[in-house]
Image (cartoon, rainbow over all chains, first blue to last red; front, side, top):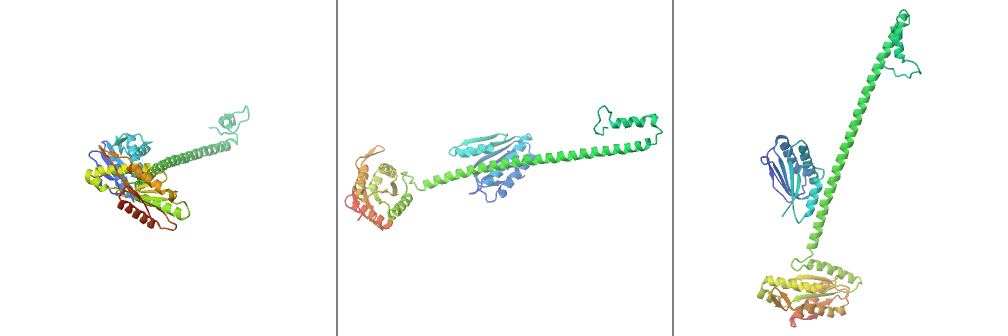
Length: 125
Length: 268
């Protein structure tokens, strides 16, 4: 479960993990050609963290556009957080969005539905 | 143990009666006693077996039913998840579509004046030209150029020049009908296309546009400034290519400039 950082590209978001701080960060657009390739390391890291580390985890998101397979991958990630939450682990999602794109907030709210862990949708600049 | 066989009314269960007969000392020497005892034991064993088999079978059935229910629950959860993915994905697509429309709109706008740009004007010109060629009604085009715009820029600066351009654009746009085109054609040039318009009315229309700019001074910032325009005006001849028409109107504009500006010249 080593930390890693994947720089943003035209079609993929920046992804950065920080085990010490208990932070997983994703920001940008997500249109990967191969979503498995992109998200599997994230899901593996997350599983490792939730399995081995007892400190709280914060998922920091600033995602704009997601294609369908990315939507699915995000739900896998949120499902893993929900399981951890139900086991008593502290997990939080902070989803930040630009004020001039309120639709992103609607979409984040759509994701949030069904989950009971803290899931904040935060307007920014 | 209960054999479960139905009892005639007022009778004790068969098993009880057999138990009683076998334990009764009076029948100890009956030759039927030993075979009955043997038969009764065999019967009891069989009954025992039967109950065991029934119990095991019931367990299997219950397990099978639970497994089926588990599948159903799992299926419903997967379906719900899939529906959520589809719903969210549709919203993302909607968002992209809106963005696309916005970009499409922007690609037809001039950022400074807010008027349609040259690309949009050309598209409308081609459509209108085709319509006229197919026997539709004729249209009138004008190329309108601000007089001495270079002097305005040089004297008051480019920012002031931009304000002047925007102010002229607003007056022109307000003076045409909704289905006409008033576009920024280039630097300080505008193109007006009056659709469904007879060439004989071109002069009045052009004069109206000239006057809407030139008759009242503009107030830009703290300055009051009179701005005039020159216009080249023309309409399509039967069978004439759009490029030829544009060339004639351009030449007319040049003529209007040459003849002293703040005036209209008709394409020849």
